[in-house]
Image 1 (tube, rainbow, N blue to C red):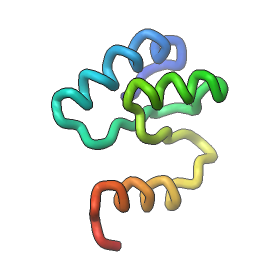
Image 2 (tube, helix red, strand yellow; image 1 turned 135 degrees about the vertical axis):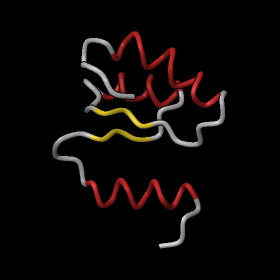
Image 3 (cartoon, one colour; image 1 turned 135 degrees about the horizontal axis):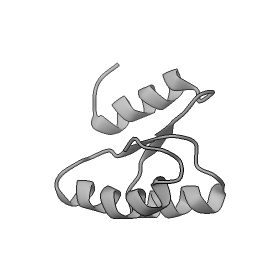
Length: 72
């Protein structure tokens, strides 16, 4: 899910469960969660990872591939 930070509170709770319902095994948000409460709420909605400036991209993508069952 990619948008502006001010759109995420409306978009993520609606889009993440719908994407999961339609077969998405992973749902990523392009952006850093505002706080732990927001992160928890998004994860409960079905978000599996967050990509943002400063995140350990190698670790995040390795974890994503592991969860998808892709051999590394």
